[in-house]
Length: 551
Image (cartoon, rainbow, N blue to C red; front, side, top):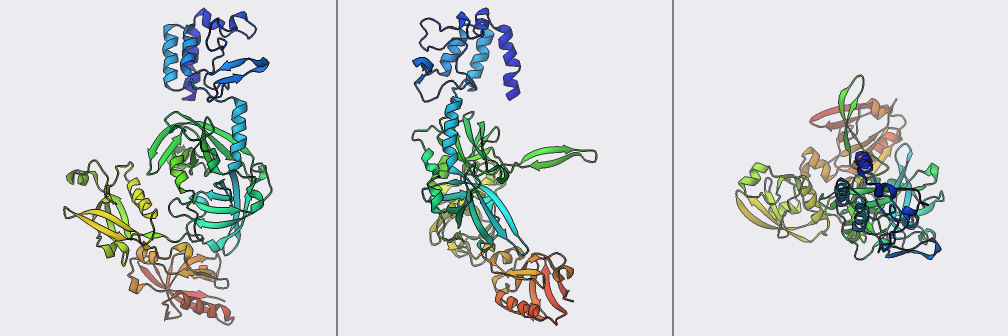
């Protein structure tokens, strides 16, 4: 698109321009370039503030120029009027087309945009920390945004994996742009609704940070297609996190289910704010979406690949989705309480089934399974029920259809355990109204107890409710522990133990709890005379006895 706009149309304008239009492009000292007598805009012909010309601030009525002269604000219609006076009918048609595309919008002057950038970059930081594993400490660097005067910073949900426990997170540091000076920080936890991780910087840094909310401008119009947006990128530690400018135009706005915009090109680092031409906050960048490509090589003739830009993103949440959730600072590092319904595998209704059920104008979800002893089961929800309404409102018609399940999950996550959630379902062609009292979600993997046995070469963790779901094990039969890590070239690796193996017996003794497993393995590890031990494990549908040799 960029090449099309600067290529053939530009040549068409030149070829079809009248002599007066060519005079308008003469050098600055040419008398023909003086202001047209009686012009209400006081702008020399050929100097109208077009696309890419940093002539005028869009919010300023008058701009002071050198020598005390004032330059009046020029809108796109006046630009078209001035140029059309010296153009052929074909040129006028092309200019009107460009005006409709927003090409002649009035941009900021470069100096003013630079000032806006310098101010708003003070809300952006880089956060570094370590993830401690059994063998080493892995350094991680992510981008974040300051949200309040207390130095609270939000990080994207992808900053920390779902399996990483808070106990593994060490040594948080915050870096300002263009600075290698580290400041101490504390990890506060993850919010279940937004997915954001919250960090709080030490007090001596806070005065140098500007909260995201400082850039809210009341009356800012909602974003539309083709609006200009810009943001901030930050280089790496080896370049002192130097900030750089990114700019594009809005290409798509769509509920996914949150209102999300996709720009024509990257407009910021993931997790950093996005602004409009006037510097008003309009959103917060998400992780970049993958783009499909076809890879050709001597061996592969058209191999499909998906590429993701990890450092910059063209996708951002609109500000109205961000601002109401800035107060959702976790009460603890686990992010609890976590509201829980207990309906597993929500799938969109097949289009043909939807037409048969007269659900063409809304969405509906089929419940694949209702979990044992869950709030959903207690409320009477059953597998194969079709959810058609939540809290008295029909499920919205969203595309793609998979987004509807996310919508329902978010509606649950914005509530608290103990809240009542009204559901309307279809069962055997009858509509039923259910009232579900949400519970607190059972322990999740990042909260599980873990223990590493260095001599044995593996880590075990608690058997969780989710492990029972994955293995279709009833609560009464859930016991033992799960292998969480296997050290390469260790006795456990030689004994063919693998991550996610379910250990049910140790040396012929059934293991009922995590504590029993830890005690039994600790005794084996401490006994320097032991030459081997035996585990009964399950992997998928297979059960095997694994002999682990220590010598």
